[in-house]
Length: 321
Image 1 (tube, rainbow, N blue to C red):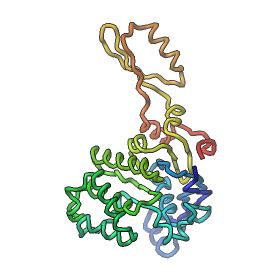
Image 2 (image 1 turned 180 degrees about the horizontal axis):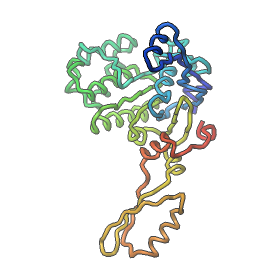
Image 3 (image 1 turned 90 degrees about the vertical axis):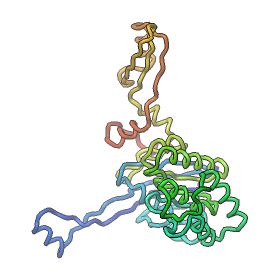
């Protein structure tokens, strides 16, 4: 399957003014500023094939949003190459944007004062969407996201979940081949999140849309994405499957035990100390067990351990792409 997105050794630096404490330092800052260079993105490379859904995650300030803005053509890299479906985004932005959809969860592209449907009509005009295609997509998306009850309301009257559904539809009305979703479920309740996840999975399966999904919610990643890229301090530190990271870096498992007398026990075992087969042999040797269940480690805990340095990943060049 062909690569839709190819990123090679991209870098993005920012010049940040250094401020020292104290009145004298503040006066010096006014007339003689000193700067330091911050590496927002530092030698990041990856490729993404047509139809992949890739989770792109990292702690705050890791360089995620900067990378997404480079890929969407909003920013240019200071070094490296980006080729997306034959386009260089920051050089061919006018032609390129016809092929992509972008949703920034904290910044709406909808017109605040217009009814939602009129924002969609505006998108139809901007992207020159044929009437038949527009009507077909709007009907399908509206039904999938349960928007019929609020599609004629002004955007300012919508709840956060309703507005986010509107933003996603606005980004997909022109049937883009590539979609960048930056925190599309931020601040939403469980029902709204699941509705958006189901919609993303449907669009990907039906249209083979290539999707990069940036989020802090690991449930988004587990339920939607096939592959995971982790970035920290501007560098790629992992590129591979979610199952791979679970199997390789989960250090403990929880076992729920139902004894013959119907009492329940919960025990947690460090797999670095003893392999699972040894743990199970010891349990059955020591207890009269009626039933047993093994709880897999949650991805949230593994990712938290990675961010906080309790888990050290292998060289990312050995993972995925």
